[in-house]
Each structure stands twice: as C-alpha cells, then as structure tokens.
Length: 362
Image (cartoon, rainbow, N blue to C red; front, top):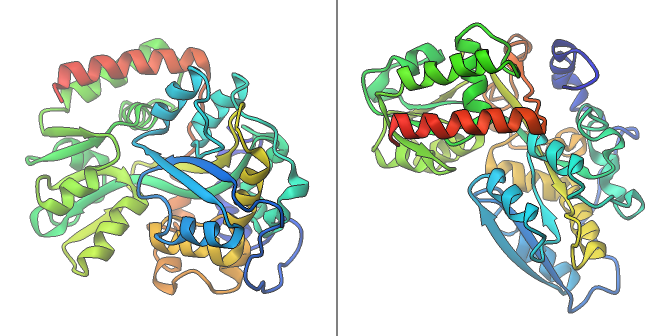
C-alpha cells in the first residue's frame, strides 16, 4: 500500500494528475534525441497492445537506432523469465505489484534521473509511491482499472461483479491472479489484499463455485473474444475494452467499474539488471515521457496517462479525457483499491489460482 490512506490517495487523483511534480510544464516542441547513440540497439519487453503504432518507429528515426520490441501476455510471464536471468532486455513494463517483487529481489537497476529531464512532466500523484520511494527503479507509464467489458445487446446494462458471476451466459475471466482473488476477497466480505490463508481459501472457493459460466481464462486477449462474439462478458483491463469499442465504432460494447469495487493499477517503465544498453534505455524513457509521445500512447491504448503536461496541454483526446471509465469520478475512486504483494502472499495466491484453473477447467 501507499503511505497515504487509500481513500486520500484516490480522491487526490483527479486533481493531482494535472499538476506536474516540478511545477507547471510549458508547452514543448518535438523531442530531440541526445547525440552519440546512432547505430545502437534497444531491446524492449512490453505487454501486447500497449503502445501506439508509430512510437517505436519515431524513436528509431529520432536516434538512428534499432529497437527489438517483444511482448508478453502478462507481467507474471515477464517476471518468471527475468528470474531466470535477463536474456538481454533493456526496458520492461511491470505493474506495481510485480515491480514490488522485482525491487525486493534485486531484478531492477537504479535509474539515473539526470538522464530523464521529462520526469518533470509527470503528476506527483504517480511519483514517490510506497512500492518505489523516490522512483529509484521505476517511472510511471500508464494507469487504469480492471473491470467488466460486455456486449450491451446481449446482456443489457451491467453494474456489478455479482451480475457477472451469476450471469446465465458466456463469460471470460482474466488470468491475473492478484486481481481475480482480490475481487473474490471483496465478494466474500474480506480485504482484497488479505494474506490470511483461510480468507484466501474462501475466495478460492467462491471463484470455483461461480465458474460455471466461464468459457475462457484469458491471458490478455479476452477483449478479442468479446469483439468476435464468442463471449458476452469479460473481466479485462479498461484500455483493452475501450480499444474494442473504438475499433467497432458502434454502441454494442461497454465497460464498467463494478459497484463493489476493483483494482486500480500503475504500470511503470523499468530497466532490468543486466540490461545491455542502460544509457539508451534511459533515453527511451525520457522520450516516452515527452507530452506528445505520452499522449499518443494514451490516445491509442485508451488508458489513463500519468503525464500531467500532456493533459494540461490538451493533448489527450477530449472524449477519452471525459470518460469516467478511464478517468473515474471521485465517487468511483472511493471504491478502488491498490493491490499489495510480498513473496509469501504471492505463493498463497499462485497456489490458489492454480487450483482454481484446474477446478474451473479453463
């Protein structure tokens, strides 16, 4: 958890996201690459569907470099791979939960802030958080919620987890152990960050008992099943559902933050220990934090931006900036929680999730 109370942190979000940590940022021109990197290579490892179409190409052109861009379905997969030793990645994008573990396990390199002047563009709400005080190892990238995407024509209006878990139709869950068990803990009347083995067992049993309508546990592609009409509802990251809604250019789909509450998360840019090119990685992070670049990414992914300068300069699409599913209202923010993690809890949750997937049979 953050050092501030959850409610205080969330209520400040809507306002603080507009205020850069180091004062009001003036409008900026195009980003300029420092000299001396021509001909070099950068290896980026990121979630799928999580960057604008031209972000990488524009960076390559600006610096005269080559970027090898690989993707993973979940950051748990990334974590497993890096625990075996960094095979050559320079930049990774862990969630706050996984970043906590990576910092604890010594898997991330310290970042030299002197090489990232565009840190000044970030809103202070997203900096100096409890999992990484002083942002020694991570820099905010995108933020959002996890909720329910659904086909309005098939389901009607949906407002709650209870409706999803009791729905008489086809549903996909998200293969996100911290989120899924956190939601089940809420549904069983417990703290979503509980480490109590009995409460986790109760949450496990809740999911097993409510898994009859599940046809798929999606790594990070449940939104595609929704778009293809293979399911009626999906538990999915907010931006993934908004991308489906945007591509459809129709009113068939909707996204809701369930009334019982859900997970609020921050994904960050980080440099794994053993990165072949940390200097270029820091240049890339500075590039991503430029207001125009950050805005392009958020406008493409439909996730919230931590880049206060991008918001202040009006670079975020007006429709996205006004959508309460992306930038939640104060009332909704009160129902959001941050997931916490440690190695002992990670083992308990992973063991429970393995049993759930076996018993649900998906």
